[in-house]
Image 1: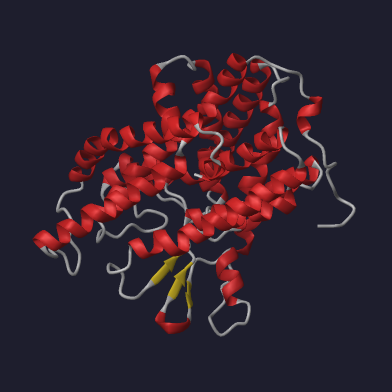
Image 2 (image 1 turned 135 degrees about the horizontal axis):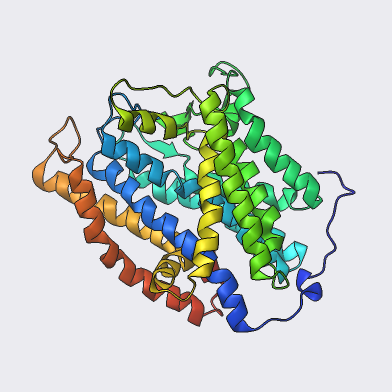
Length: 401
């Protein structure tokens, strides 16, 4: 960043009118509820990866031959990563309201490097013994960590420049799709991290798989930060909701138009003769790795609409239940993945492999059975941890989880 770009080292809260605790709770509970909503959806996808691990899921999904249930479920879980990354940017803005730039920068760097460490040294080893060689899976937690580190610099841009960066990155990165480097190229590792989903060879037989190339995600987290001022205490709820509605419907409308044109932003969809359901799945199946423009438009647009919905039904039991997951997202994320790995390895040890070297169910319907069975057992410890975070604000490290 240019040295001339800076933000005064004072708290944004100096210029924010005081508001009641109830108003703040109403204004922010919808954010926790939306974050919790995507965490609950995420469980469905991770259950598929646990118990239906050997079933190939193309990117984008193969609507002509794939299971219809998985095609529809994949679209549902597509909302998870975009919304979570955007809410991360929004959350950083809300953090910055009551903290100086230096404090916000310190938080971003500490949290970013912590997330990278968690991905490399905890989450990746959970899958060792399943894959052929020790693999570092550079997935969503890695991606969010790097994006937060980048946001420590990007947030210093003037808001119009930050919005422009986000829009250009999200909207035009598909123009870079034809650039495919090979391992012999000196820039291959960097490009694999930025935009080309691929495998990077590491010493001692390790490999790193860049499941989440970060370039478009940098745009998403920047735009999430940029809309943060819509959630300031001095913004009336009806004004915020009107902006979110325009944004949400505008993005979904843009998705439908671009998808019908079938010329940019993703691989073309096609009509499956005599099967309108598979044709619909083809229409909504977009590239996630890295996320195409057409992948991000409906998912982020839907997230904006859900923010409005959850704010309007703020007093409901649904919002309260979802907000529990959203108040402790990292705890829930680590908890459910750890539990799933323990269950999988226990089943593999007891019954042995039944599909190549893996243990899996023969029917995808069992994934939904496990989904219904695990929500409550996972909810109980998440409630405990959410209450602990709220009660023990004196324990600094709790805010990082």
